[in-house]
Length: 436
Length: 177
Image (cartoon, rainbow over all chains, first blue to last red):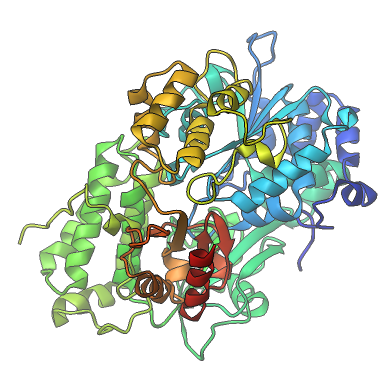
């Protein structure tokens, strides 16, 4: 049920890691050609764990050879984990830093790169110190490091830098605003050179894939979602934490068997399956496998695997406000539909919550969603639009009750009542008012 | 100095910074950061801003000028980058920084009560600094510790499972430090 692949034999010590077979996969990979390593990754069907789920081996195969394009190749690891509900990369870097480093070195070999940048979110001081400590242990180990330099680059607080092109901008010393694509990073990424950007969990899965062989890894899990997945469980659940699961396990089992169910004798209301940006599931929809295909059938996604459990005290309009305030705060401002739309969504939802909304405001809310969705360079604004539309679709009665009662039906008793979002601390950005 | 921003030069943690200790000037520390990136890139801006904030407490006009000179950029460019990022302070902050995550996973288990407990202990609102200049309190977006809610970052190190009852002891610890 719960394979230990990524988090197996957790240790921060080099000697202990080597004693349990650590860095053996690196030696195995270096005895193979880069093409053979990439081929094995393609065979493994490992897909990106950052949220986009793109096949990792195929991404590597897009990097042109140095004969075709004579420029340095870069590996950039996305450790800017900031999706509300996701905290798996925090634990992976803290518990298995050497497996992560081994994954960096194998990937660097596969794409013929001598330069690795790990972009870690600025808030992760703990994981940063552990990672730097692990790299320090390799100072006297040229046999492991080879000709590869690993630089750990700290972010400074910006959710958008988890988007790969914004991350590259930030790493180049600029404001973290997404680029338009194409060109894709594989051709023109960091410093306009061929670049592979992979998530921490993806990279940390590479050593076990090489060790066991791509075919064996692909025998675990279900079609389209192979191997294991580290799932972050949080919210109204007894045992929050990270769990490495075999894909296909149902969300119901994750919440009740692994998570111990809902505390305080409350009832389940809804589950957000893959971090804040994924379509919500009602309590009647959670008997669904945690894998790409099963979740696609119910029009949602694994995203970055952050499962947020919400009990019956959660007002769905307030949930929309809190996450819309988050997207409004984190919008980089480059695309108008996102910059303006996210704050309009917040303003209209606030009007609903305060009992000042008319029937037309609900239509206006959905209309703003439509005007954001698909009209921006990156998925940030889309995420706000998609989730708010999903709350209305699945909890329309609750939205209607806010209009009909002229007040929030929770009467100040919602679990999200009065929560202070960071954007409310900023006075330089006046709140948009919805015309009466 | 203890406190806000990077509490010490990143170099003291180890890799890439042999011998980079506190006595190194900011200029030299920034040059060491710069050496990690290609010559014609501006990649050292964020590390340099972090170092400057660690030394000055916040990114004052002087701090921005020092960063700009060390990197051969303009202060305006450095400020334009700094203003994008939540952790970089363009106004003075307290000696210590308390950041309470109020995103959904923390909020549904009581993050707002934690914020209010800090406000009452410190005598200031979130977004402000206590009168003695000791502590700046902020509500922040998801810190990435959702399963161990409520997360409070005290001088950038996470305290997990914080509830309102724990707040007086944390404030006492910071006032005594």
